[in-house]
Amino acid sequence: MARKILFEKLDIPGIQEYEVYRKNGGYASVEKALKTMTPDEVVEQVKTSGMRGRGGAGFPMGMKWSFIDKKSGKPRHLVVNADESEPGTFKDRFLMHHIPHLLIEGAIVSSYALEANLSYIYIRGEYMWIFKILEKAIKEAYANGWLGKNILGTGYDLDLYVHCGAGAYICGEETALIESLEGKRGNPRIKPPFPAVSGLWNEPTVVNNVESISTVSWIINNGGEEYAKIGVGRSTGTKLMSASGHIKNPGVYEIELGMSVDEFFNSDEYCGGMLDDRPLKAVIPGGCSVPILPPQYIFKTANGEDRLLSYESLSDGGFVTGSSLGSGGFIVYNDTACIVRNTWNFSRFFHHESCGQCSPCREGTGWMDKILHRIETGFGREEDIDLLWSIQSKIEGNTICPLGDAASWPVAAAIRHFREEFEYHVRFPEKIKDRNHFVNEPMEKVRHLLKPLASSL
Amino acid sequence: MEQVRDYKQIINMSEELMARINELLSHYPADKKKSALLPVLHAVQDAHDNWLSLELMDKVAEILEITPIEVYEVVTFYTMFNQKPVAKYMFEFCRTACCGLRGGEDLMDYTCRKLGVKQGEITPDGMFSVVGVECLGACGYGPMLQLGDNYHENLTREKIDTLIEDCKEGKVNLY
Image (cartoon, rainbow over all chains, first blue to last red; front, side):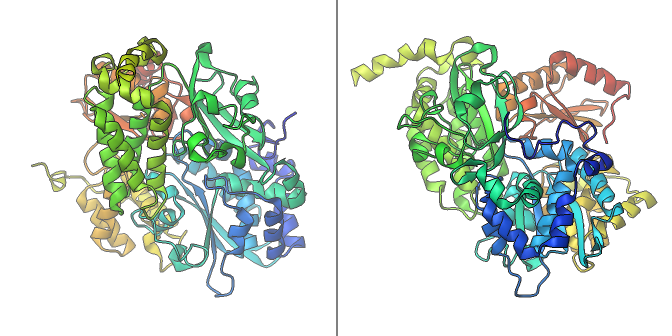
């Protein structure tokens, strides 16, 4: 039986409702933390747990919390990042939809740890129906004394509100999110100062992902040490994986970190293998920003070790033969998928979502979008492939926020592992005019066409 | 050239809407009214046929005690705010990655043909439009579209046909 933390109570009928949630042990961690622990003891437990931020970067959460400036005496804030918009990722939505009180409970305990009295959940505007679910859950928490003044008679006050965005991927970046919460355009800020020192309204702020905050209750109830026993090495605990693409069972799954990619991919409990049993072409293990992996590096690392779902194993080999766990958006491609089209799709996405502050990203994403579009529609040139490589290398590391890197990596990985598909597109434009070209004629069937040139070189 | 200011809108700051705005304002410190801008714009847009004219944006600026430009720059930055009239039923198809893999683009084309519009166009009766948007976080349930506040997932041609009929008969809730 697989270990469940976040989904432990998922199958209880009516768990969305306050009464059912409470009857099944809900809000126990608030009682425990507020009545028997100091805020710093809560931080200590989270540190001990080894829990790493689940938004994508994987930064240790306890450490992030310990950076918050408690000395200045300024008001502090927790902001929960529910701006989930990394293509391939839909876990936070699932969690908030099915167990909304788990997030509220976690947010209360976390705010207490940070000694914050005013906290927010920033949710993307498109999740308006979840916004309503959360508003209702918060109202219930207020009505039952878990929020507001003098919670449980301990003297601790907390106001928690849900705030909606309005359609901007960039607002998932923590400083852009803060700008947006201040009623401005979502332009990321230059760091330092980090939000822990100067965040929302220039006050100390911690921004954490929904999944991370939802885990806090379990850590407090069971102890950080117990949590640290789950998982593998420095990848402690469980992770929500969003599985999509050409697989039998798309959906959200909770896995213990360290599960092999093979098991996750093939077991009927999870992805269930390839849809219609077609051949596997590629996998993106952590949302569209992380490098795509060709078949030989999906189940095994370059050293021949089993590839595991953990921060370390997925990034084994760096970006040459590895990738990253990212946000856990596991996207599977079969032989009918076109890597060029997919890469263009991502570049268009990043072009659309670039805030426009830094010129390498603003101009570079648009340029890559344009070049990939022309390659995909049959107007590409041989030199375009090297041009793309050169552009992506000039965006990476040269922008204020990681969106520039996120836009570069998928392009670099696609060229690195699937260069032949780009070459096929530029050399046989008449064969790729139809959007579904590889559905009609997969790469396997046309690969031989590329050979004559290679031998004549 | 078409100007944003050419679009006229009847402004109705009803008691209900003002009550909602005041509730939203209460979520932020009294001296941080600007923070309520995005939620307030959503509420105002929902009450005004899903778009925001210049006059309406000016009104929001007045309520939040900020300058009009602070509202304009936000409205033009975020994709969910519409600066001109939109169709009553705006079919917003996700076209990113996973939805694309599962036939999202083909289904969007089908819907365009069925309604006799190109992407971004509105049917002459003002009822329907088809728009391509970026990832809506429904990657495992594609193809999908958003209509008002709601998601319609695991779509097929048949489901699209039914949805269009239901819209025509007024059976679809947007909010």
